[in-house]
Length: 310
Length: 275
Image (cartoon, rainbow over all chains, first blue to last red; front, side):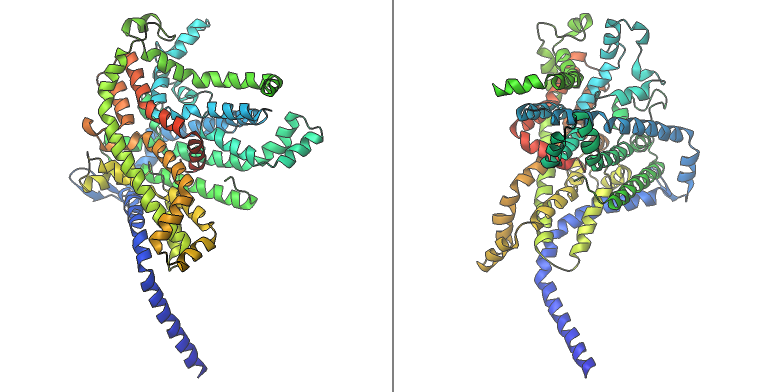
C-alpha cells in the first residue's frame, strides 16, 4: 500500500511537471535564438575545427589524413620558430603588464587632489579611442627607415643605431614589443586602478596614522591586495597573445623571412594565402588547447587562494 | 585655491606622470603632424608640424574612406542591436524564471567565453563559405551577433540581484512577461546596457582580422579594413594621406568617447575581462 501511494505521488508530480513544462514552453522559445547562434557560430566551428585538423582540405576534396597535420606541425621548423617568437612576446608582455601600468595607477591613486586623480585617469584612457589598426600603422611608420625612431636617434647623436627596424631579423621582435611604449594607456591600467579603489579607506588611513611611508604602504598593503588583479592581467596577457596576430600581420607579415611569425598568423595565412585549411585547423587546435590549459590553471589558482579580481 | 595647494604638494608625482604621458601621446602627435604635410613638407621636416596645414590630404583620404562608414554603421549597428535584444531577453529569462535545464543553458552560454573567436577563424571561414555569405555584410554581422555571452553574463548577474518584490507585485497587478521585461527589466538595466553597448562598438570598430578574410569587395569593407588597404595596400599613398586616413578612422570613437566618458570607462573596465 505504501508503495502504491508513493507511486501515485510520483505520477502526480510528473503530471504537474508536464503541465509546468507546457506552461514554460514560451521561455524556451525566447532563449532559442541565442542558443542557436552560439551553436552555429561557436560550438560547431570549435568542433569542426578539431575534426578538420585530421583532414586534408582544398577546393576540390576533403580527405581524412589522421594525425598527419600534427606530425607536420611538430616537424615544421618554421612553426616551432614561431612558437619561440610567441614565447618571447608573451614573456616580455607579462613583464610589462605587471609593472608599468601598476606603477602609474599607484602614482595617480596617491595624488592628494581628487580632481587631479580624475583628469590623469582620463588622460591615460583617451588613447584607447585611437583604433588599434591606426596606432599600429603609426608605429609602423615610426620603425621605417626615415621614420620617427631613426629621426630621434639621429637627433640625439646615436646615428650608428639607425636601421630599418622591421626589416632587421635581429631586432624585429623587440620592435613589436616596444610598440605602444610606455604601455600604460588602456585596460591594464584601468583594472589596477579599479583594484586600488576597492581597498578600504580604513586600511589606508590606519597605515597613515601608523606613520607608514608611501613606499611601505605600497609594498605592504597595496601590492599584496592587488595580487588578484595582477594574476588576472597575466592570464589576459597570455590569452591575448596566444589568440592575436594583428600586430605582426599589419607590421611585418611575419617577416623578414619568418623572424616575427607567430602561430596564429600561420593559421590566418592557411586561409588567406596558402589555402591549407587542415593544417591551419591543427594550429588552431593546438592554440586552443594551450588557452584552455592556461585558463584552467588560473581558475585553480584563484579557487585555492580564494580571491577574485572582479 | 585649495586645488593649487594640492597640486603643489604633488609636484613630483605630476612630473613622473608627465614623463609617462608624453610618450603615450607621441604617436597621436605624429599622426596629426604628418597628416597636414604635403610631399615636400614631409621631405624637409617629416616629424614636427609644418605650416601651412595641408587639408588636401584629408580630401584624398576621405574619398577612400567615406563609403566604409555606412558599412560600419550597418554591420556594427545590426550586430550590437542583435546582441542587446537576444542577449537581454535570454539573461532576463534565465535570471527571473526557473525551468528545466536552466543551469545547463547558463553553463552552455558561459563556456563560450573560453572559445576565443580568432582561434576558430578557419572553421568559421569554411562555414561562411558553405552558407554562401562570402562578400556579404552578413558574413561579419552574424558572427558578431553571436558574441552574446559576455553581455548575457553581465545582465544575468544584474537581473538576478534585483529584488524579487518588484516582479511579484507586478505579477499580481497582472503584468505579463513582456510587461515585466520592457517596463522593469530594460529601464533598470539601462546604464549597464549602454556600457556594454559602447564596449562592443569599440571592440567591433577595432576588428580587422575577420573582415579582412571575408570582405574583399571594396564596396563592403569596414573602416579598419579599408584603412589598412589604403595605407599599405597596392598603391601606397603619400605619408600625409595615410595619416589623414588614420585620423579620419578615429573620429567616430573620439566622438563616442566624449559623448559618454563615464559609460565608456565603465564599459571598458568590465569588458576588459573578455577582450
